[in-house]
Image (cartoon, rainbow, N blue to C red):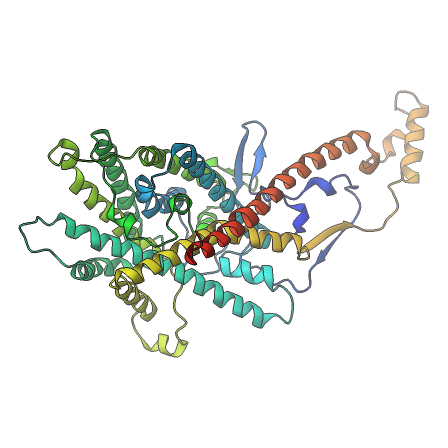
Length: 534
């Protein structure tokens, strides 16, 4: 059955069904009990994506020839492009502010590693939820997790609207801060003997350059891919210049860090470095890019596994941001202005501005569209929603510093909540407080017993000793043994169940840590900070 579903308790961390039903008799009839209120999935996932190859010890994805896209803005992406978009958010504003957090190494290094681990863990939670619920996007998962069932269409519609609005606020805030910081950095390159360029003029000029990127349809657009690659390249060049300046003792405090809001403290800045919000759409795009082969049992290479790509992106980000934490633990006190280290300061500023500027297109293209009536959309030959969002981003980038500080606080609050808190909340709600999607149970039947004809044939052959008796030519094949009473299979089943139970304990512990100490503690700290309590 191609659309067979399992209960939430029967899925492990790789998306495979639990072996807790394997000990039942395989020859007994099975009944698939569906949740009658379950909606049809917009596309199908392979249930055994991450089977373990015992010969090679690697996880490989089965090719799912029936995978189809349910939404036009989720386009197929290669594994290289998916890696690019998974890595890119880690090498933007948060990473560039790390040298200024001024945090001792005994706190900064554990904070960096813990943030990276929690970010990878949260991505894995979204991956598991997407496979279990067979939903491609965040609003689908939220609606199905909190309002599944008949008669709840209105609640699902409200939840989808709230999720799209929250996603839009996060993406627009991120694009605004990127564009604003770029426009405030570039005027520093103008020599002192020339007339300084106001920041608002630089914002408008950058907006004109940014407009062609805004017209792209999806992340698969070549202009978006190239802009993201340029952003990664400029970050690497910026990192090289920062390392050189620090080695010469001339690395100063960035003005960008001073323009941030109250919530941009040392630990929160490190945690923000590993925030991302496109995990689900990238997973769907990677699945959509799989090319079906002629053989059903063919495997795709491990390089096409989403979990592998995600872990590699996190590991690369940790390696690239680790030196910045060391710089923050022992900051420079630059005093010599005419030195080789001071001469790279303009390159640091320009490369930082370029990194943030070329990071805006990938943010804008994934911003949810505005709810414009269909009658108006059909009457226009251009994309009104994209243009309005672009104008909103440019206008918000022109606001005063005090308002920009509030926007930066909104950005870090939304980014941290969407990355660390929300996946844990959805996971716990779905698996602890909701009914399973469906359950596979054995039907009530009598245990297997040998048929009379088979018993007679066996007796005839055994009476002749060598099996050449009168019944040997017409004997029936022996009936299979009842696997439910096989001691060896029962021991293997018990071992598998024990291993599965340990995995579930680890995952349950992890999601509760994300929900309560990280999410709840962070919320209390944010309220106290904004209220001026600490």
